[in-house]
Length: 247
Ligand code: PEP
Image (cartoon, rainbow, N blue to C red):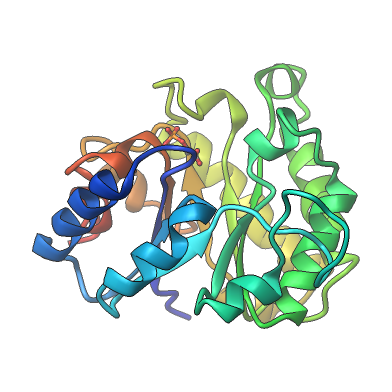
């Protein structure tokens, strides 16, 4: 089965309206490969602003949301609110949420479940730390993270899995294409064994961790790598080259 290539840019807590305008202008200039799903993860405060200006070929995503619809959860944003302003995507489980904000596998799985039930599509992030990789625990860590999500959801149609080794995020240390492919293959087999062959074949598994215009072409050649989640380089003109890595 052919899976449509998917490239997400995670702006994190960066930018202003002016910066958003410049980033959008760069994407509009493109040109972007029409065979790629392109998503931008925008700070909550600017979602509405960006949504009003973005062309229809670019998906706009939140970077987080909470696990219930409404209530006394100061500072949080719900999937219902995102849908209300026309946002259809959310990035969940990013390693910065896991590490800095202490989000557990269980909380992330609850968020994924509620987001899907609310009609959002989800980029669900998983990945091991350097310590875990060096201890030979990469496969069991990512299996545990994805298993927590599997426990709570029964439909994977609207899920993109992002494998992001924590040691490669924002560090300039990219996993080699072979290192990334190895884990993607393990994840695809895990989906086949634990969910179904059909889900394994149809679910996009994208790679994140210091992806640049320069290294994206090589990584994109790997058979189980269906795209990228990009942090730093999504704030630069080279994001267009990453979108076009398959061309
Ligand atoms: C990320 O934050 O998801 C990421 C992969 O960041 P960077 O591309 O900067 O490593």
